[in-house]
Image 1 (cartoon, chains in turn orange, cyan):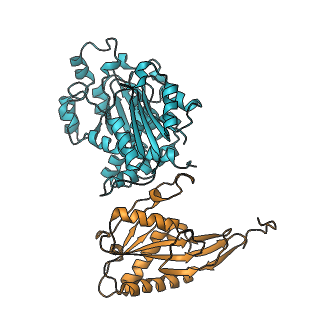
Image 2 (image 1 turned 90 degrees about the vertical axis):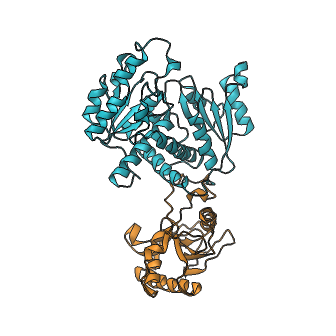
Image 3 (image 1 turned 135 degrees about the horizontal axis):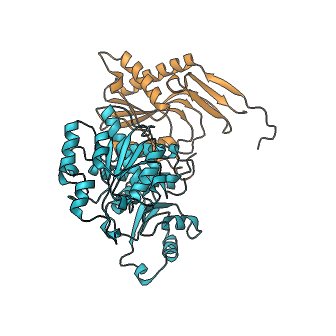
Length: 189
Length: 320
């Protein structure tokens, strides 16, 4: 292990403005990949994936022709019961799953999460999704990809690729939950 | 949480978190695919030394909805009738590969004995022991009450207690493990409890309980309560005469048509709860049991959600 234990440092890698720009780009990527907004559903993974999905939906709705209601695009997908570490970690309280009124059958579902790391959350999300319906296509959008995958999973839309050491922690703060907007790396590099 | 033996052991935070998890579990029961994979590969044993329909089926449904395997054991027709001890029966279950034991036993304290000894070292859920406790029934009653009040007020039940609600528990308190479990839990969650019973069906020492005691059902109803929990008159546990005859019991302590009419004409929003099985015409009239106030079937539905939450909490990592 690291013997020269330097004091923990934390540095901001994305400011609030950076997050705004990144989300705008990802929103356009999603529209481009989908060739429009038809059949599009954004499902956020609790807790911070949901506000990110809402922000993306607002940008997508704003850029689409006609009056598209952003709320009709967004949902929340809880994955707690599908995790593979329930036996080992602390008991997690599940969050509600809320799907848009149109459901997800035959839709293009974009899963939205804050940080892509081991890929295990996304594996659980794919299992959870299958119990709710059968989307035509499932894509993945994340704010930060920090690497260190443990499963063969990749993101279709990445806000920022962030090379990290496993010992570091990536913290995403969003105004809706934490009061501030920033992405921080903590721990000695 | 290692075991679920008594609602008296639950802190307010623990109780509310079980109810919150149950809220999500109930939601999963409304979708097309009801099964969740949370307890895949685990085995839950229902160890029932005493008759039961809804509790056993409810625990079985709860375990299966979480993808656990279920082994049902009932004392009738088992080696218990050949004289096998609780310890040997329990250790046999461990050898078969159980991960959790749900036990109902006619003797108060049997689940606590299993939990306290090193016989099996598995999580134990008390599904009713003698006249002691029936914690999952109390949790589902509290869940039903919290949910109904939230529906009425248009609020979100998550994270809430039962603060300020008035609950009357009516009937055979002496033999009722449901009454005891409810008393501790309602008290922990901030509700005011009144026990209503004939003096012969109140245990010695009931006056030291954190509740009001009344012998007059009409006065309690007139004072305005949020819920009336009617208890079953437990004929099988009565080996002495506690009241002169069933008609008299029904007249004084039963929720009959006259009292239901009183509730309806007063405009009170009082809910009628019953843990089941009901003795229609004795402690509750058919009209009361089938009225829109009655939550009897809702309680059964919620029972599965609450038991899913309990099994999930015991078989996943430790809370806090």
